[in-house]
Image 1 (cartoon, protein in one colour):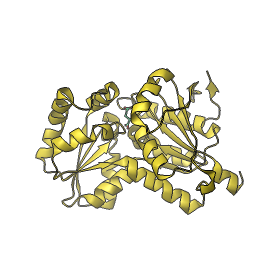
Image 2 (tube, protein in one colour):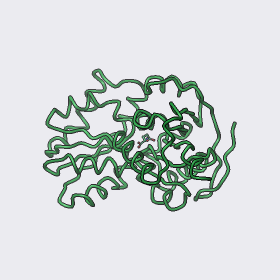
Image 3 (cartoon, helix red, strand yellow):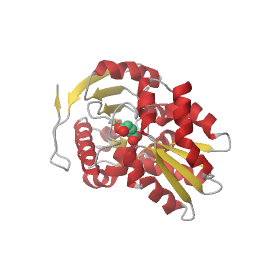
Image 4 (cartoon, rainbow, N blue to C red):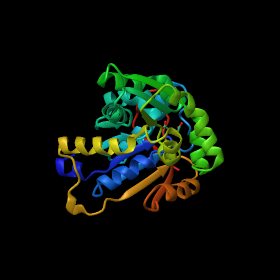
Length: 285
Ligand code: DGL
């Protein structure tokens, strides 16, 4: 691809389902001239409880599909997929790959005064230790407390982001972490920003919440500038296309709530299976 053609190519954004829309929204606000292609692997969500090998295979299949859409950069807008598959994807793909863990970890390391940092996410993300490693690389004296909060994903998918059930769940999960004196809490799952007002209330104003979406949009902007790959501003408002691997109707309903815009171009696709590593080819259904 020539440089001008590459700059006009879309940014690919991938998540296990709808959670990555929080990252996409931040990206589209920050870089309005960019075209984007979003893939939500809704047929196979959640990735959180799945084995590292399975998540790596799913991520490779999603990446191959988006490469087939001619993307210039891939955003892995899923914490679990980033935690499990980012090194493999970065090594094997011909485009730059940005995950959500490093930007969130950087932000937490910068904003914490005491260095006592809590990280909440899926079981896979917490088990991987990816946030802990990324934070300690930046602040070796930090104390990082990880906690899996799987019910938060279900609450968000159900639209129960406030009210008694959500509050009791948040209190039950967060109490032990808060008891350990954290001053910063990383929302290490793409669904959790939707619970942000409630989590802030439960954690109290002395705890800084860090959400990877903004930090990731910032990292994407810097990477595009560094490589001279930003879309020409004269191109106007970038187009957004959406693909899912399961029923598009449910995605459309949820996405309308999560985004500033209705998803206009939305298709269901079937991802090509890979034996482990990436392989070209994905077919539409
Ligand atoms: N998108 C996932 C993440 O950020 C949450 C949902 C899932 O378990 O797949 O980790």
